[in-house]
Image (cartoon, rainbow, N blue to C red; front, side, top):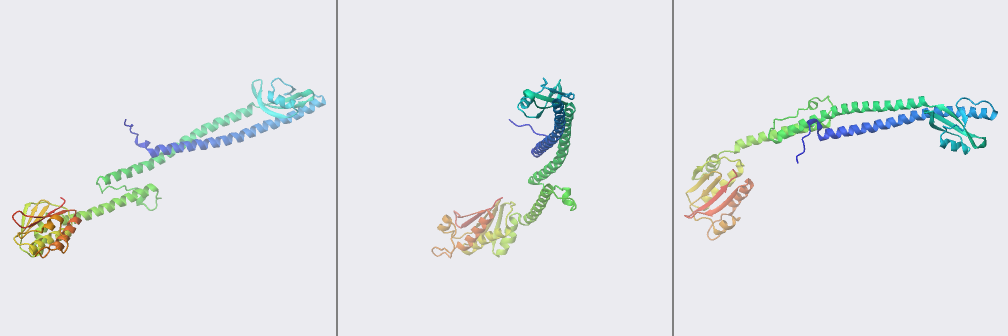
Length: 357
């Protein structure tokens, strides 16, 4: 099943960057929120605890002196949290946030005669509202900060991905053969602007395209020089240079891309060998990408037809065919061409060179 195409802004890099930015912003906001919450809560609770303990001290002194205790103080009040009641019964002093008449309250309790608990309550509603308001502010500010950071990050990442997409598009155009395509990143043209990694990639791609284009133009100039019709190098660079009486027959003309110098060596050796070891007339026949050199002598030795030329080898009264033909074979192989040897049915040696068209 084919996956649905993503919008251009939702590329892999953009999505990963957005997720990373969001996670980091949430983690940072949570960390800062926890730190602020803990700090303010400790401060607010500490102030309420100090006030409750101070009032407990006053209430204890009044209770021991038989005086009237201050408001909010009493022995074994019914709303006193059980953990704090047990702590006072055990002879300890302590504080605890609880409720009194449905309101947040800071309790402080200590022991008195008879295993009872003397406790005071301090209104903690204001402190609770302060902490709740702080938590709401942290949540809202964190959300706004995350949203703003995500928006700025998305814009920045989108600019980078857009530049990368443009670079990739140019690369695809170059691979398709459009060597005139260039990224043209403004940062590569202005040395005063900071050069980032995308600009470096764009500059490298433009440089590569320019280099390829230069090489292609050079090859095209070279090809224009060597990709002639076979008639031209045969009649112009080879036969005249040999200084021999050689007939050229063109059955079917063709154009090929090849190395002119190597081709001249191959044909030159074949023509020279035909005149040196065969008899005239020597005929060079061009039939498309196949070039045949034939003499009308006694033909090639049997070993040469079966195994190819062997340097300096002779048989019978032959003066040898090996060196020149060996050179021709090596040059033909370098051209990627094939060179075959046979004897004509009506007599004479035939060497056939087949070029890649």
